Length: 523
Image (cartoon, rainbow, N blue to C red):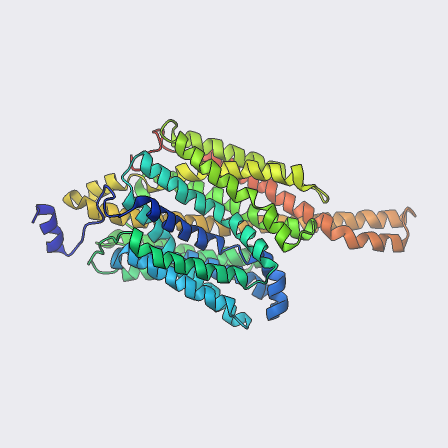
C-alpha cells in the first residue's frame, strides 16, 4: 500500500477519481449523458412558461399559482445546490447523479398527472430537488473524466452550451409541445430522465465516496441562507423590492450566509472549502456569471412575453421563433473552445459580453409591430452568439485551479482535495447562475413595470388633452384606450432589454479581470 493510500485509509478519507480521467469507460458517451441531463434540468425551468394560459384554464390557477409554477422549481433548485454538491461527495457522484435524475423523472411524471394546483407545485418543487443534485454532480463528473488541457476545455464548452441554451430551449420545447397540451413537456422530461438513468451506469464511472462525516451545520446554514436569498429575489419580482416579505427574506438570507461562511471556516471537512472562493480568477468568474445570467434569464423571460402578448404568437409559433437562440449558443460555445488555446479567457469573455450587450441594445429597439425578420431574429442571433462565447471561459475559469488548491491544502492527499473542490466549485457555479437569474428577473421586472406604468400614464394624459382640445371625441378616445396596454407592454419590455444591455456591459468590463493565460482548464 502506498504512503498516500495508507494515509487516506488511516484518516478515513478516499481519494477522488483518477486525474487522467481513466475512471470513465467512455468519455464521449459520458459527456453526452451528463450534458443531456444538464440541458434537461435547465430547460425545465422555462418549459412551462408558454403553457401558463392552458395551465390557468385547466387547473383554475390564480396569478400567484401561475408564478409559483415557475418559482417552486427555481427555489428548490437554487436553495439546495450546495447541499446537492455535497451529496455527491458523500455517496459517490454517479450514484448521486442517477438518483437525482430518477427523482427528477418521478417528479416530472407527478407534474404531468397533477389534478390540482397543490399537486403541481409539490411536483415542481420535487423536480427542483432532483435538479439540485444532478447539476453539480454532472459538472464534477465532467471534470473527473477529462484531464486539464484542451480536451477538458472542449468538454466544458459542451456542458456550458447546454447550460446557457437551456432557458431558450425550454421555450422552444414548451411551444412545440404546447399545442398538444401543457402536460406534454413534463412527459417528455420523464422519458428523457429514464433514458439518462438507464445509460449512465454504462458510460459514467463512479467516484469514490469519502467517509468523512457530513457537514450537517454547513448544510443547514447554506440551504437556509441560499434559499432565503432566492425566495427574497423571487418575491421582489412579484411584490417589489419594498415589500416587507422581500426585505426580511433577503436580510435573513444574507445573515445566515455570513454565518455559513464562519461555520465552514472552522470545519475540518466543510461542505464548501473556502479555498474554492479564495482564488481571484474564480471569484471574478463567479461575479461575471452573476451578471451574465441576470441579463440572459430576464431577457429570455421578457422575449417570451413580447412574442405572445404583443406580437400575438401562438405557442407553437413562439417556440419556433426561439429555435435560433439555443442553436446560436451551441455554435458559439464550440467556437469558444476552438479559440481557447489561442486566446486568454478574458479576451473571449469580453468579446462574448460585447456581442451580448449589442444584441440586447438592438432588442431594446423593438416596437409594437416589429417584424420577426429582421427586428427580432437578427438581434437574437447576436445575443446568442455572445452568450455562447462568454459561457465557456467562465465555466473553464470557475472550474480551473482546483488541482493547485488541493495540492496546497492536502499535500499527498491532493486527489481527494481536488475532487472535493471540483464538486464545490460546480455547486457554487450553478448556485451563482440561479441567483443571478433570480436577481435579474427581479430587477428587470421592476424596471419593466415602472416603464409600463409611466407609459400608460403619459398616453392617458395625451388622450385626455386631445379630448379637451376637441381633437378627439370621448368615444374615439375610449376606442384608442383599448390598444394602449400593448404600447405600454412594449415600452416595459424594451426598457428591460436596455437595462439588461447595461448589465452585460458591466459583466464585459469585469471579465477583463479574468486570467490572462490561455483557457485550458486547470492551468
